[in-house]
Length: 499
Image (tube, rainbow, N blue to C red; front, side, top):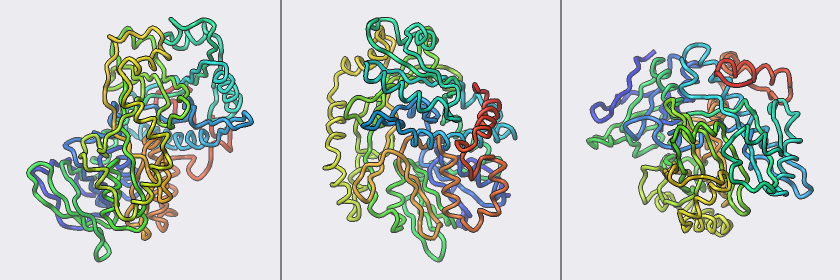
């Protein structure tokens, strides 16, 4: 096993020998893949290249995402209502299944001591859905009835009683009209996840197991020659160039992944585009206010709004301190990363994706209109959205913060895809991840799927270890209520969550 070291590339250049694996991007995806691979292949030479001088600075940063631990417990966009009034729970169940895989892996790492303190990255936080208006109340009631008996949604509660809702989360009721129809569901077993802390902890574990972490390193070229990948790099401090070779490359660079996959020249990346959307939240830190709302509460998106605009009032626990976030308010920037360049969007347009990009723009005029409306909205208009959740909200207790950049995938057919997309080279020697939510929460199943696609000849040999890390691997907890109950209980105990 190679000696581990976190290296500032302003002073050190990686050697020119061939690594088994190079990971590009120091976020939750690369951290998860590094943690898994060091257990499956402890002798492999694995290296991480990160553009910034520290890890988890973009989408994995806790202030750049909601930290919901997307389990579809409260996110109403995962349970659409059909014209006949029925509720489609397939997406919610699928997302929850994926999150349970992540929970099992994290619990395994806690059990073996690789993640020494689960409270450093995950905290028990009830997940609530809250709606108002007769139509929305009828919808939430139907959603509850569709999910309450499902083994992965065990313990879901429903009420239309204002006194009960006040008990669940006191901020939502004072100042609200008493004749307004309201309803809420609650699952106490929800969580708040600090993906920035989790990323750093996973890399600490990976470093201890032999992964070399190289900071301040920009990848400027990526090409395959003589059966290996040649990476041209440049320091962000000092500008010294360097070269690196790898048998396998994972591009987990968030908004920067599209450009790097385009540089690789693989056919599978041609035709894909990206549409960047920035975000803003209102944040409150006053301890007295924060103490009155210990939950993540999701509402319904306004008519015509895209899925990522679902309003939510969240408890966030970062570095042991709780705050409240409300949002998101959408914005627009041509940057693909929060610290990216204004040329990111125009620079991503190629002869291969020009038509899909134009087609996506013409086919999503409602999204364009929504973004324009958000950009033109006044501070008062934005605060009014919070007042729909918290009628007595005090403007002096809330301040705006800029969240991370999200680059939504534009498919080869010109469709804007709200989710994640894994792109894998035909020979399995390179893979990358595009897209956004619910990515971080489902990092473990995404990386296991990537390994299956890229290393099919090794999966039989790896399966026993994978099952040790993720006991439900290859099965669906939804199909076995007893297994689901046991898994939820076991992982809750390991991670310090509610059952």
